[in-house]
Image 1 (tube, rainbow, N blue to C red):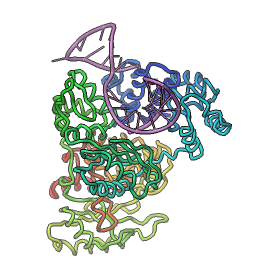
Image 2 (image 1 turned 90 degrees about the vertical axis):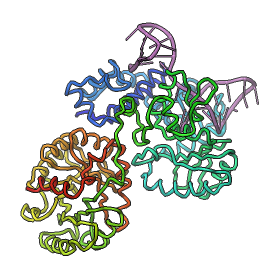
Image 3 (image 1 turned 180 degrees about the vertical axis):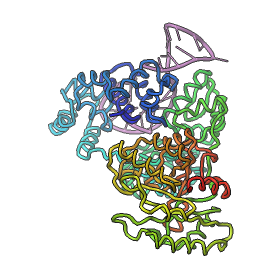
Image 4 (image 1 turned 45 degrees about the vertical axis):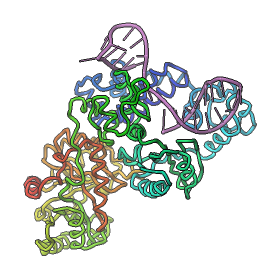
Length: 574
DNA sequence: GCCGTTTTCGGCCCGACTGTTTTCAGTCG
């Protein structure tokens, strides 16, 4: 089985955990953690890069040793270093390491003094009262560990769109506190990740006390995890953890930068500063005791000779190198979008008429809209067959010119069947402006079969855009077993396009897929997949994801003017 | 284990909060 980047990352993270338990050189441990991060953020499969003979030591944080380990994992799916470590460390210790409040030092202490090597023994030690006799373990830690053992970590991440609702009301709550001048959501939310593990709120105020007090007395709190002068953490009833920091005006930019992260990006920035004899912390950039920057993020970057880097790019996955070369992308914005190539109506599972959807699209600032309702396929209710599609085409044509500033395009979201054929015949598809193809069944084929299925679909005479390419539903359904790079190459060869579906649960392509598409010159259709008039707002989420994937307007199909779009689509409809 | 406009060895990001201490180690972000 070929090793994917996520597999490589998991192996490096586990090596780091095990080395930590053995109290090895912390910088060696950090190197493995960094490598895991780098592997995860790669757009292209490392295994493919190895096969293509690429020198992996060109990647940040990857030297001769780690490059060799990546090659080993790519070739064998295993890593001898990890295999050896696993023999030296009892398997339960790693589980203990992931409990809140336990780090390597305490896990080693548990093993040394109580012979505890796993969760079950820890539980027994708590129940027998032996745990609290250990130096450094008191009643609070005991209670916290007992809790964690009783309720195994959900570790669940929340959809960004869901977290946004909590963020909105928390921000409004804090903005009402006297003395608060500014509130920003930082963290992975600001970086635009599709899911967030927690919310990080940053407040500008001269005194932290009242802000912390207001924060920790917010309504839906399950528990206050920590509360100091300038910092506090709460857990909401929903389980969402929210962290607060309060800083003064002179530090706001530095703090916003620091709490936006990512950690890898921040660490990299601090190292750059260090080499220049500067120190960066959340209060500013310092030369000795003198603050030389920090009021704005721009000032922080500028003090290091760098242009401001957009939050979506801050993953230490090439943005520093690009910034130094003056080659940062001009990321696509919502204003760049001229149309939307995937929307539904009440004819299938949408809620509005063609005309209402068209007017809503116009209100959302779009110039063209493709009506792409579902085709009928096995088991689907109300999908369009050839006759109903023909009638819808007539309806769409009847609206031509009736909605000022908006052009309707005739399309279909046609099912890709198990064998790669499409659910409607060629002579029906031919009458449309574009064909959007999608997988809605047979999600569990092998990688070989699934890849072949999609490649066959792309080869159909009428096929324009591959919709939600991996069919993932975040937190519900994993992505298809797919050689995505092979499929993207297929799109390039065939002149087809690939979709970034903006539904919050899909956001499919992901950021790595976006980078792959751009590398292969395949234009991305950022689509709302709207099922109602309000759904064009979802395009914002798609744009955020596209920005995380380094996409510029030139790489986005529906940023093209209508005339140009028509030419591109015609080539897919011969 | 990585890395270099202070280079091939000697460094490696930084601070707040907690719990348990009695001056601080460990954890966390």
